[in-house]
Amino acid sequence: MSGCIFCRIVAGEVPAQIVKKTDAILAFTDMNPQAPTHLLIIPTMHIGSLNDAKDPNLLGSLLAFARDLAKEKGLATRGYRVVLNTNPDGGQTVFHLHVHLLGGRVMNWPPG
Ligand code: 5GP
Ligand code: ZN
Image 1 (tube, rainbow, N blue to C red):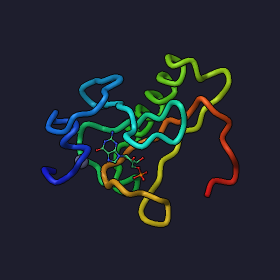
Image 2: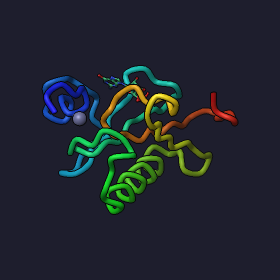
Image 3: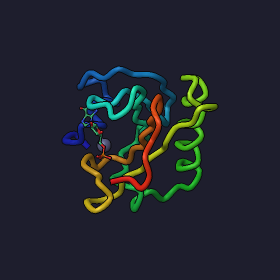
Image 4: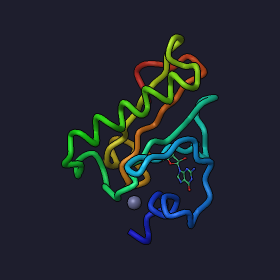
């Protein structure tokens, strides 16, 4: 997907602060952080949204990846939030599946 900003980050065409990478998953810092730690975890393959995700193993891997990063960043004990916005009502603005990992401050509930 040449027009997709996250595919362009995967391809190295758009710079990003890469935190961790496997063949299937990439994590990088959000350019507009909403918490002291705000990472995006994405599949390297283009998938538009959670609605389009067919492989439950990949979804599990994305969650485990976020959980492991939270541990590595020292967030696990205090706590953190994992968010997956889907389509306009869910607040999704980039249509390449991504998991937000937010931590380093107390999160409010309900979300806006
Ligand atoms: P969404 O609103 O779709 O759940 O989240 C998209 C996120 O991607 C936003 O938090 C936004 O700041 C981030 N984002 C959008 N474009 C870029 C970019 O080019 N680089 C990085 N690092 N983050 C981006
Ligand atoms: Zn993409």
